[in-house]
Image (cartoon, rainbow, N blue to C red):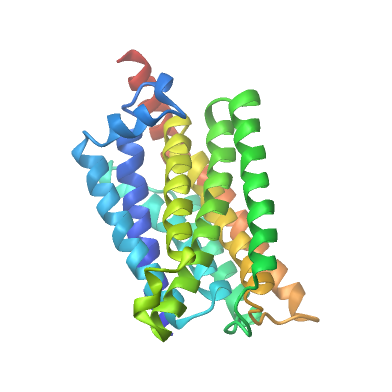
Length: 292
């Protein structure tokens, strides 16, 4: 229960961070996309710095959750970040969510509960070997480069935001693998953590994922970037957890219920991203930015 509570706290913090960072990112000219000048422009905005503070809090809650629970348990719980985000948007911008939006939140919650109850994720049976780390790194980096290339060369607006959101979600999931390994090293020998490569890999992966997230938020509406980020992170994390750490997830007939749970999460995310009140606000914000 404790890992789930900590993961819910991380999801709430991340949702607050997403709303604040999105608000700041939309004020930056499109020409700064994929450049370090994007960060230089953002760092001068207090609202973005507040978002980073919330992100750091989420990072701390997530690390604590991973110290007590499996990757395949903690990361899927973070999908609650999406409903939290939409509720925060409605509260901060005075948007009244309709029945369809609340139904989508209910569908996502039911999907998460179904998945966790049927999968019953358990702790890992072994630490990752060097060969597994290398294989995971090559596949992850290759996938993210491919997604970024597609987003930059072939897409604009909401499509670009969604694809970059997927890339950022995969990056944050990979960051979580280093985070989990770092917490294990710290528990066994705190002094060894500073000398471990996993700590620095976590920092590098986290910064690169954050860079992709800022570009996703700057490229298009939050309702396009956030669902893509929220869905890709837990799906990738389940794969990392089972393949890298040998975490336990039920198989056999349980796979049907697990797939149904994931399906409900995806369906609820799509419904929520199409919420008429939130999409109307996104269109109004984009129009205001273009006039400015």
